[in-house]
Length: 335
Image 1 (tube, rainbow, N blue to C red):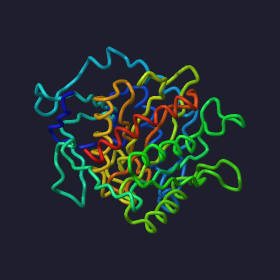
Image 2: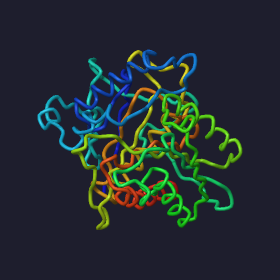
Image 3: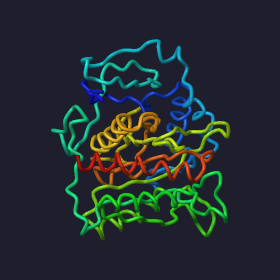
């Protein structure tokens, strides 16, 4: 399959830009980002590094649109930015900013020489099985799938994290799987400061293991009960995955107290995995979802937040999704 070519610079003037999303989904996400960034739900400037990111229910209506976007919406008002060529894939950006976008750029303050084409960024890691190089963790460790229970305790994000760890180890990677419960407080579900607690725990792990170069936060999404995010991959029913990118900005500009010096690297990492999936496992991924805050993606250049299916998927469908994920991750890091 031809490589994606990104030619042009974009200036993000909004908290939420979505690759290939519907208008309804973007509007609801934007409203939530605006509320969180303004401090209405959390006193972020004084106490919070990241917001309460409880997704179940609050995003159900929005995610239902993922299955069938409005065809008229996607056809009308499209504009090519940059040079369109025969060896380029199109990536659709839906503008929910209320403003005209004439260009698009992502600034990495510590690396001005980063390539404009994110597919040209070198995401490779020299494999060394003698030291930890990949960290997997779960900000929302209590997220589970529809058949989770005493008879199927592995139907959770922690369970699929265990399987992903094993698959990557089989490919020669030294992986740490952090199963800490960052969203529990006093034995009860509490996601109001889960990203803060995760930042403390993950930072400690990285300090103790400075050889770690890849950090993956594995989640599952929350959608309408009628929406089933699944496709067949390798003959198996497989939960669809979505790469989720915090942009560290609101519609007014960058969030100074949530800096991410690795924003371009994060974007390149997600884009290369997205394109690898499109090449080798068509239909497996949903989109790259961009939102205004940070989500602890500033800890390493190769950081990613990945939504694996939703509460309507079975544990086995989510487990099956780890096989192509391990494959494309390995390809991006080693080929």
